[in-house]
Image (cartoon, rainbow, N blue to C red; front, top):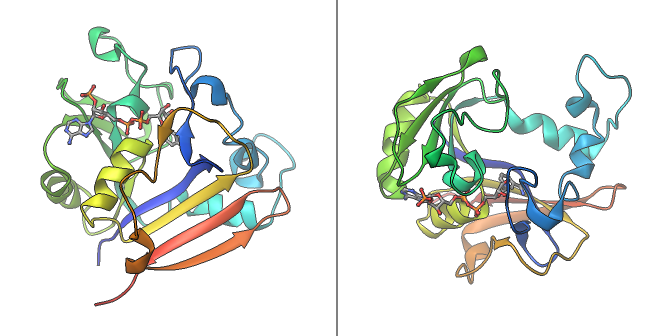
Length: 214
Ligand SMILES: NC(=O)c1ccc[n+]([C@@H]2O[C@H](COP(=O)([O-])OP(=O)(O)OC[C@H]3O[C@@H](n4cnc5c(N)ncnc54)[C@H](OP(=O)(O)O)[C@@H]3O)[C@@H](O)[C@H]2O)c1
């Protein structure tokens, strides 16, 4: 059965998934790269062209990004900095061959024509409720899972609507104080999930929320 999954969404101890302000030069605002240093250190991130990298728990979790995923849904603020929709040439941060390799749906109130990239990624620009959008995206996923790719705003909205089956959050031991927060308005969320935590020697804690059956 096709599930909706969040993979490796990194938050600070105070629950922010990004800092501020977000600009072309600073995609994560004042957080810089600090939310993802654990990932950059993994063997998986380094890939075929770079030697070394950790092979422990961080690597094992980071590798869950791709297997079984047939489509992604991301928010407008993950796709680009404020005002990207005024730039007809903006095609996301990721260059000609983005790492998604599937249909990728950008939730936005600024619709535009789909953009076909190299490597199997096509960006589609859609709006609607989380339920409506998920229905459309499930079809595109061809029976595979749908990744809810962030940022915090859309993950929160999908959680609120009860539409996430598996949530993997990486708690990074930094305090950002400001930015976009994941947990607001989700009081008692844990009651619907089996929750597990694994701490890595890198200092981050991997939290998994798996929706309970029935
Ligand atoms: N920590 C991590 O692991 C991680 C992962 C991914 C991204 N990020 C970061 O998170 C930040 C973005 O997060 P965010 O919380 O600011 O925003 P976001 O979740 O990426 O996007 C929110 C925006 O999406 C559009 N949107 C949301 N729901 C919609 C709907 N139902 N219909 C139409 N449009 C809808 C709206 O934009 P418009 O009205 O302008 O269209 C809304 O302001 C970026 O800095 C990104 O780099 C972090």
